Amino acid sequence: MKKGKLKFISRLFLSMFDFRIYPFTQKEKLSTAILYFIKLTLFSSVILGIVFFCFLFNKSAEMVDEFEKTVPEFNIVDGRLETSTSYSGEIIEGLFMVVDGTKTSANISEIVAGLPDYSKFSTIALADKMYYVVKYDEETTQTLPTNNYDSLNTTNKSELVKEWKETNDSYSIKLIVLAVLVVSVFAGLLILRIWLLIIYVFTIFIFSFMFGVRLRASGTIKFAIYASTVPTLIDTFSLAVLGKIPSTVTFLEGIILFIYAFYGLRAIKIDELISSGSGKTPEERIRDAINRAQKEIDELNENIKNESEHLKNVINHKDNNGSEEQKNGTDIKDESDSSNNDEKKG
Image 1 (cartoon, helix red, strand yellow):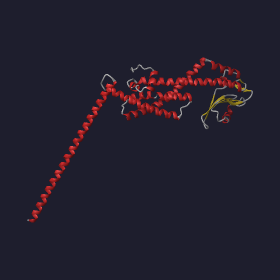
Image 2 (image 1 turned 180 degrees about the horizontal axis):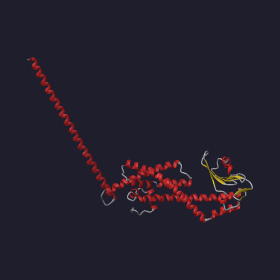
Image 3 (image 1 turned 90 degrees about the vertical axis):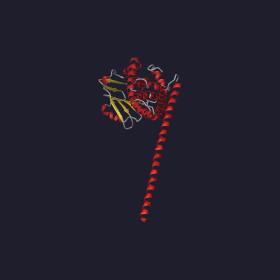
Image 4 (image 1 turned 135 degrees about the vertical axis):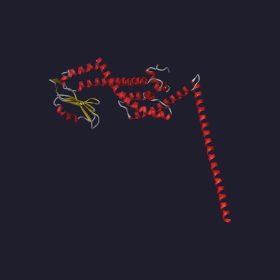
């Protein structure tokens, strides 16, 4: 690998399938890894933005057809909604709609309370104002009022349907919507990935300490950035297919991070071993490093052995001195006792 010559796609591929990239990236600047992190997040954001965009416009086309069939005729006169009959029902799966020109914003609480449990998203058009209602769970409901009808360019149902279809077919509007989706997803995803990256950094730091690999703070961040490649792609796939990140996916990412931490740190350790040796080929450098390491171990063992022998001699010497002192003390005591006995006899 040539330093600084890897493109984004190459880094993406190597981060997933070649653990040799981890010692390589340790020699690069931290800014290079941060740039890769931003590109990776943008890459995921573009994928998710396109998926959400396709879903939105497919649902919008389906919605306008159903709206045209089921919702009764209405007119907007002097900023107020007038309907021939009231309507309440599900336009498409997950979207409920209420159109009632006989009720006003004073009745909104009553109408929201009467919405069915399955209606997660609802649009309520009353005589004076329109509302959007979002149900997060059985106890949490958020009602968002819009501006009055004076802000609309339409005056009846036919014009609204016509403008709606023109919007769905407009390439410029589609491009704007796609750009807004990508930017919005990028902002949210970047915050999520930075938070997870902090967790990854602490995890890598603990693993490097356990494996005896010394990484600088910048090296730990770089390692965590490249190790987060697979979890980021898994999150992207999960959001694109399921629309959420289940707990099982989070658990799987933890296992993957452990695997990449183990093999990545091992690759760095081997690279340090190769770099410390001398020779023309990697095999020769590894062999030389191993021989020097073995020599250091032998010298260490010899030093330990010598220290052990020296300590043993010191202990034996002290024991011998203690025995002689004890023997001398016994002889002196015997002589003293003999002298005392002689004095008594005299």
